[in-house]
Image 1 (cartoon, rainbow, N blue to C red):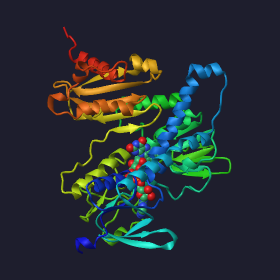
Image 2 (cartoon, helix red, strand yellow; image 1 turned 45 degrees about the vertical axis):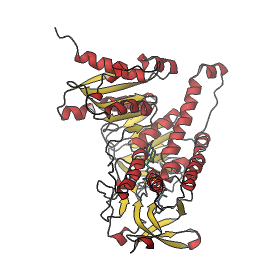
Image 3 (cartoon, helix red, strand yellow; image 1 turned 60 degrees about the vertical axis):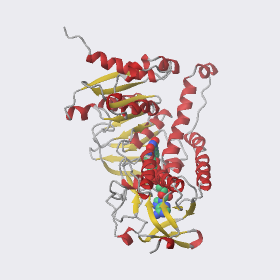
Image 4 (cartoon, helix red, strand yellow; image 1 turned 135 degrees about the horizontal axis):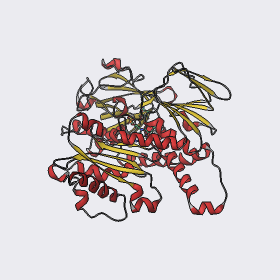
Length: 469
Ligand SMILES: Cc1cc2nc3c(=O)[nH]c(=O)nc-3n(C[C@H](O)[C@H](O)[C@H](O)COP(=O)(O)OP(=O)(O)OC[C@H]3O[C@@H](n4cnc5c(N)ncnc54)[C@H](O)[C@@H]3O)c2cc1C
């Protein structure tokens, strides 16, 4: 096929973070770009079902809690009650704003958008099922699969039942449960556990492992467990699903341990499946793994050279943040430039309070026999923490005991996901510029949470310089 037989240089399937970033980067490089998505509105699952609505819901509830705890509210002497649907409806108002902004980007950059399901015909051809039974076949030189993921739904659970939800359908819940079972204590399960607990719902959080979010530093994972329990969440570790019976008035979850847990509703947060089943991958000789995910090389190419994949459809880390970078990296490959394979995305977990980390944790450093020291700062000991009334939380810096290089930063508390980026910037410096001493030798605004970095650095350095006489 000759170049001028193609309708587009790049065709992108999926308009979530990976697809949008690839489309924008391709357009900025003056490539002819088209994007196809099964939804009529831009933004992908990220904007319509995942990151954006869940973070907006959390923010709405956080504002409510702050208001309830304020002295002004206490003087009012009233206790206004908000239902889940009321708060959810307020939170979802952000979606049309996001869609409008993204539509604007696409229009300004002349990116053509096709709403419809896409299916491969060959390595350069995709058929799009447009509205009213009309279909169109597009030919493109490069094709990016950015079809994302959806909640995994085991067949033995009746997800049509009005008391059983997953992380998509929870956004349609029309009542406020008094009690809620959340099955699956990964990031999404923990985030929803703290959202519902903050609303006063009694939550049972079922975890199949022996600790929460075991990829985190142990101290941070312990702090999360403590906070969730303190807010009334019953965390149950080492439990596995057997069955879930849903009735008109509630659900009963049966576990392998023999426990039967009853609640008004169940939210299933156990696993996600890559959206590859509708793509006709067999037309390319490609196949997905048992989770519906595609394998790529370090240039985000699938086994077919001109077909790339990015975002949730390639699995870990399955974050909007990384998906954006992966989409941009693909365009660098297409343009023949050096590209970055994303391995160092920070972790951001929006529980109440939130968690963020980057680099190695204590367990990993100990296993690797790296001599490290720990510096800690507690938010309750900082001026900013006391002024803002957000005193729960800590910042922990792990650094090399000999050369003082920062090896990991772990934060739990208000604005942790923002605070982490100060440390990330220093960690990414080369040679001696990556040193915990930076935080001691730099003037920060005061009072700010950056002070926590100085307190933690001093705490750790004092341990190094401790007099042993
Ligand atoms: C509840 C929840 C909270 C989250 N919170 C965070 C967070 O705080 N921070 C963070 O970084 N990440 C978060 N994530 C993860 C984040 O949402 C995903 O990593 C991100 O959306 C993945 O982006 P993507 O580009 O792979 O595609 P997606 O956003 O999944 O979008 C894929 C698009 O492809 C379309 N599509 C699929 N198949 C086809 C087809 N055959 N034809 C046409 N179109 C198709 C879909 O309609 C969809 O619009 C969260 C996820 C969930 C579920």
